[in-house]
Amino acid sequence: MADTTPTPGEGPVRPVSVSLHEGTIAALKQRTGRRGMSAYVEALIQRELERERLRELIAAAEAEHGPVDPRAVDTKRALLRGDAASSADAA
Image (cartoon, rainbow, N blue to C red; front, side, top):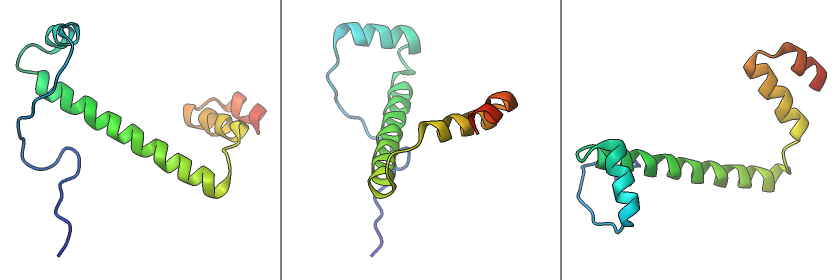
């Protein structure tokens, strides 16, 4: 039987109880209004889960292939940003 566990952002919505500091709740309500809190918190949690998964993938890749060369990262970043002078200097 296939695993039918929903991934983050999928499946039915269920209420849960969490404890937050009063200041956090006040800031959250100010930013989202009373009705937008759940969607805001859901999006924050999904982003954090994605970041954690990316950190895990990077750690696994570095364990297998060694650390990333910072100069290569700078070169690729310059190419992605369309900064031809920086990419030529970094290459």
